Length: 125
Image (cartoon, rainbow, N blue to C red; front, side):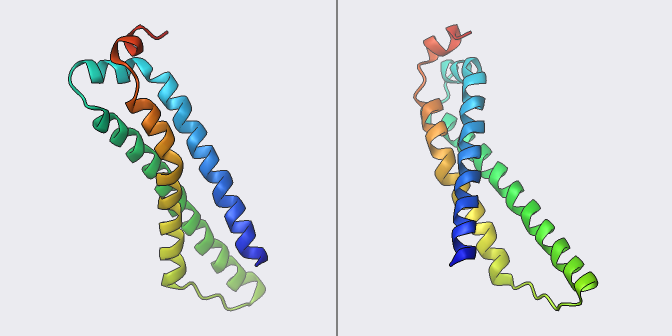
């Protein structure tokens, strides 16, 4: 129960960080979004672009977390003498959780970007 609650809090904090980074990215790239929409990109195209960015960010974080976990498990085996087994299920679960966090917390910034008016976005400074 304790480990599950720590993991849930960590995922929530990571998701909030992803959402904040994506919201800043939307704000900084407002002119780019306006230009893309002005030359024919649909709201769905813009939304998919930002959603894919959020998913990639969380996937890279998940892969780095898995690599770090494997290294720590190896170090525990070497220095503490404990036998540590890494199951495929835990790796798949960690990867799936990471991707879900990217989708859930990347959806709002992606929707915000897709709803921008091209004319107002091009005038944005």
